[in-house]
Structures are given as structure tokens and as C-alpha cells.
Image 1 (cartoon, rainbow, N blue to C red):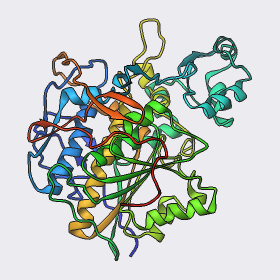
Image 2: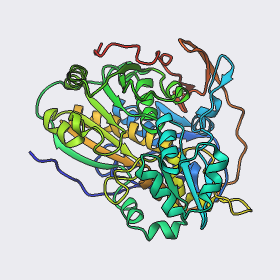
Image 3: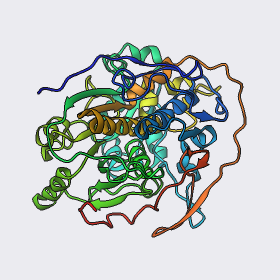
Image 4: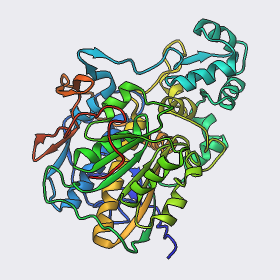
Length: 462
């Protein structure tokens, strides 16, 4: 039976307290449309011209609505608004043996050009090398001087063509007038495709109130923040998560640690036939696969959504990318900060000197992460109860459009309490970290285990 695409409906406001997010969670019955408010604490704390708090609260509330529906206990889980603020800035709070880990490289920033600004991203060594190849300069001061001779569009295009990451800073109007901007704003925030379950392994949720997702097997091909935040959230509720990374492109240590709680870690070079075969053996026993690489990047290995649906028809597929799945940037690399620059957010947050700015946190990444986790929980419930499985897609660019469309809240600005950090021993040392933003019957939750050593686990399910 071919997949059935359902029409888009809107996620309605909870008692008028939260903005709407365009998603068909409600229409599909995946989340209760008549939900109560599931968060406690302030409504506004960062301030600023956009309702970043509303986006953050709505995304984390979706997780709570989905897990409460799964266990059929309204009010079992709730969201702590202070915790939301802190977990969206979790990289800033992480320390290992008392030492913080820098999260941004020296060339991940705004540069002035002849006619405007660009934003570059060079945290990863291979992206730094690509930036150097494109510009032919290594020291940042020479790079700054060189970019002053180039137009923003040309400089960003050159960097992108050489495999680097950059975007020219546009206003919202300029972005909306581009073909990519028009594509990025179309469709629902969470784009679902549903199909009937045929045969094979069906997961049944656990009656353990702390670990209701115990036994759910999640194979995680995501990196950076958004996808790993989703899988960390699923692991927190008991899912077995195997994160897969390529040995030749290691993850940044801080990002790996802060999003690695509760998971297992394996390395697999998909270019090697034996290792690719091991990955497909894992897929045969998985309930969920998360895909966070650029569209088509994993296609040669049989790891795009269409091929996976054909080979593993009952698999729940969660997919995310930077720019969306159509339009001129669809197959480009991208990150939260780059999407902010391109979509008009950086221009909205410019300072008094006219230099572009940024959101107070990487809100696009984190919101997609919690939205994706909620979608996976809801789809697991649909497969269990309704014998339907699904494929859901998110993008940072579509999330930026949602944020830009949110009305500005009139809630008063309230101070945040000091972060309540937890400590946990790990192979990396003693970790000091922000706990999850969720409560179970009013009690703050925590992750079930520390991040494992990178690539420490065997490619097998428990």
C-alpha cells in the first residue's frame, strides 16, 4: 500500500498561553489537540524581538504531550521553564573535571564584506580546511581583509562550492523573496507521511514509569545538536539508542558529551562493505532510525528514507536537515547559526552599530531536537496502537520561519534562577551538566547513564 499523506493542521494554543506551531500532530491524533498546559515557571526570560521562549516551551511541551498520551496518564510528566532555558544553553554549562569546552571556532563568526556581511561556520576541522581552500587565507585577520574586497553573495557562494559553510546575511524580506526562502516557509513544521504496518517486530511500551520507552531501539545517524538532542531525550525515557559516527570525521568532543547521555556509541565506515553490512543488520532489528545528514548524503549506502522504507517497511523514520528538502539550498550543508544569518534572524538581532547578531541560544537546533523526539514517541504509539508507521521530516529553515511568524509575547520579563547542575562520573572525567527540562510527578528527571567513550560499543542490540 503506498504511503498516505495527510493534510496539515495547526498545533493549537494551550489555553491561549503558547503560540501555535504548524504541525499535523493534532490531526493525526498523535498528540491530544485539547492538551492542558504542561509547563511551570516563567513565560519570558531572554527577552528580545522574537518569541524564542515560546518556541522552546512549545517544542518541549510536545514531548510531554506525546509521552503522557503514550502511557495514558495525563500530568505524569511536565516541563520546567527554568530547565528549558538552561538546557537550551547546555553547551555553555557543561564542564569536564571543572574545565569548559569551547563550542565555537575562531572562524565561526560574522565577517564584513564589500556590500554587507556573511556568517561562516568552521568548528569542524574539515570545514575549516574547506574555508581555507575557498579563500586561500589561513589567519583570521587576512581573511577579514580579503572578505572586505568581495560581495557577500560571491564570498558565500565560493565557500559553499569548496565544501565550506557560509551564508550571506539577509533581511527577512530579502530571504522571503528568494526561491529558497519561499520553499523553506512552505508546509508543516513537522511533515508526516504515514503508512500501514505490514509485519515484523512491534514494540510495546514498558510499564516502568521512569523508562516508558524501554525496549525501543533507535539507530542514530545524527550529529551536532538537533538530532542528538532528540535521541538523548528518547534515551532519557529508556529507549536503547545506538549512535553511529564515521571514524574519519569525529564529532566535536563538547557536542558529543553534552548530547551523549544514556546512549551507546559505535563507529562505522560505511565505505567498507563489512561495516555497512553490520549497520543494515542493526536496521533490521531497529524500531526507529534518525537521519541528520544532508539529503542524499547517505543515499549511496541505502540510507535515505525511500530506500529504507522499501527494505524495512515498519521502520519509523525521523529526518532533519538545515535547509529543507526542496529549493536551491536543499543539498547544502548548514547549521543553526548559518540559517539564522540567511533567514533574517541575524539582521533582526543586530546591535546598535549595525553588526548582525544571534538568538540567545541555538534555539532552532534544540527546538527541532525536542520536536523530533516528540514525533518519534507519537509515531511509536501509533505503530503500537493503530498499526501505522511513519516518516517525519524537520528542517532548521522551516523552524526559523515558524519562529519569525510567532507573535511577540506581552508576558513580563522574569529572572531565571541559578542553574541547578548535576554531576556524573564518566570515562571523560567528572561531568557537570544541565539535567533534562522535564519532571515526573513534580520530581526533576535525570539522564540514565553518562556518555560512553567515543566508539566504545559493539554494533549489536541488547
